[in-house]
Image 1 (cartoon, each protein chain N blue to C red):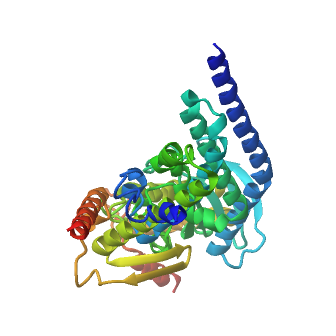
Image 2 (image 1 turned 30 degrees about the horizontal axis):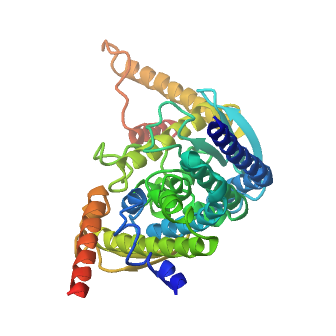
Image 3 (image 1 turned 180 degrees about the vertical axis):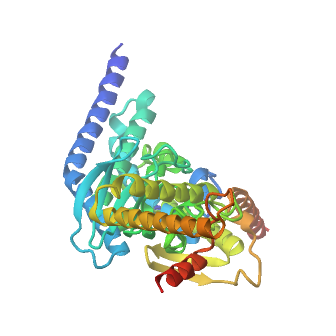
Length: 208
Length: 246
């Protein structure tokens, strides 16, 4: 029972971007298209899984005062390894996600989960927590990216790699002028603000 | 005291383990990454010149002293890898370095560019590597006005909206790459030498025509102070030539 709870909390109740307000940098910066958001979310999930598992294993032997530097070293090593192996053996994936990977080191979600959850819970629950939080984060980023892309560019990109581009034209730029500001930085803040308001509104509806 | 030693030891141990893991990872992936970079360059050449299968490679120094990797294809066409750090005149990219493969034909026009490496903003500047932007450089040469339309309304390049800095960087890279091609690569290679010969020939021809015109002019108007008539349009000169032969 607890396992289900730890897994599902990341999607709504403890959603990383909408409730914990962690990982704001990727939420705002890379969500210029729906696929960019999804890519960043999935890459973060992969690193979060690794870091949560390793940290829940070593948490017992690390003195409390040096835990943060130790966690950072673990996370940075993990991210660099993922980056190197991807560049060597999966160059296609690397060129699609390459830019997001170094950004993950400074993502607060990873360190936040390591400190708040993995260091105090068993490996099994830490794994589920990472999966739930990571996927919830990926879905949120996808939604933010989709809203920004539709309003700002009139398209919805679901997949993009070199020539393969799966995107839907929602409306034509010639007939309806897109709101370009949504693709730019201010649009990210606007979208996130409205999503936060919507989430709180729904929560209030459920409560009453 | 014991506590401090404990902290130091654990932190050093964690760091040492991390360093070891990284060293092993680096050793395992080093060759693979090198191979991928080579493959990427070869793929970019093939994208620009599909019939150029085994180009001969060489390394040439440019004016700023940076090594440029050049791939020679048949018929005087060549590709080379040009990065935004290779020339000081390149307008700075938004972040990091841009690396591109550029294909130039024997007469100095661009046959295509491919962005090999960039770290611009995803969704904005990163769109410089998309086909829709890259193809805008097909057919440009040093005689076209290599400026982004936003900087100069008569410029030849329509930049990406919201990514003027990145568009400007690529445009200036193309310009610098073409200058490098003209000033260094085209010197000493066989096809352009032929061209220099041709231009010399036409110069000689022109001076011969001028001398002949002057002679005719003097004959016609012996009292005029002017040394020779103003150059007429090419068509008239040609007509004049034809008339002379008859």
